[in-house]
Length: 338
Image 1 (cartoon, rainbow, N blue to C red):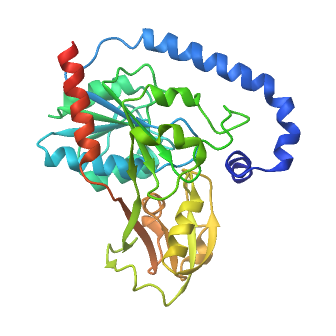
Image 2: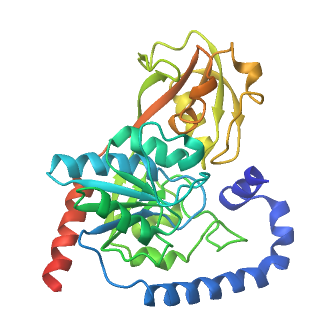
Image 3: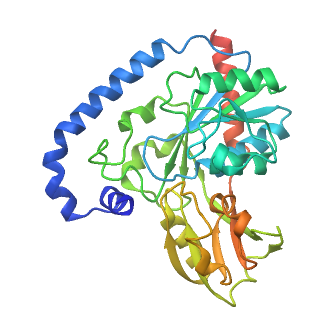
């Protein structure tokens, strides 16, 4: 069902438009609820914190490259002398909150994206569906002086100093409709209000994003290295072409992963799972002795039972410090205006 909806929203499917008239009342209700919810929660967000909060998110369903961007922004802020920390909702995790993610924290407790972010950045990271409580806990338990909120654009109960929206340049805003007819959580007008826009695509972009292109920073996710899920051994991008692989993928936009593998001239059979899927050894048992490629987000959930020839592809955004500089400039401007 998830794959069908994403295809209908982003690529078009005549069968979908047969039921759209039945969904119009829900679409109108969604627009009204979204508007009321934002006004009500914003009015109750309260005052800011003793450290600036940078929210990174999007207005559409499906992956846009937000997690690698947060990793890159965190590294840029560290290089500039800041002490960042991260808060996340922890989708897919089950724990008592707030939870400070540490080296031994199981993915089942904190969720796949927080686990990946904590491992890649090494900065303090707190998981809590109540993000204001997460920020308060993070600041009380660490020496962070700037906070990144992972996927919190619609979490209006959290006061924020800067908003960053990440957009998939290839898929754009899909058919442009709000849920459930289209993939949008909020109207495209919301993009005019955020402080920073990032389009994940270096080449031609989807027509729906043209009105926003002039003020957006361009980002391209580039593959860097294959890493063994079990041992951490690294192999170059050109050293794995001798196999026909099974490509396991459970992310918001699996087609992007498959296109990347195809661009590397790899032979593979795709095996897709829902976003944030909780893997278990039984469903992947037939692949234990087979060569497998997966994303880094999938790998953090498979280490306990990974086969010897299972590898994940690490990717990094190919842009400079432009985003960090824009964020800091925005903070400086807002501080002067207060």
